[in-house]
Length: 88
Image (tube, rainbow, N blue to C red; front, top):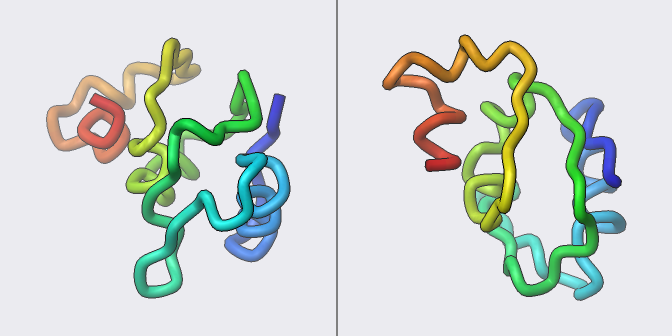
């Protein structure tokens, strides 16, 4: 399990060391994590917040999730939800 929390720099360290077995598996675009090679995922469970999913939607949306459990799921109801569109 990976706990994905913290400020931008803290999350960058988590992505670099905890997300993948391969170096450079997380691609960046303009300094932001934008995509991950899903074949190299190191974790089975990612624990994070709705806010961080919204912030890092391009990266987290590139992962082929088997299951997504969201506390406060009422926030996903909006068709304009960044999380809903990124993970659909």
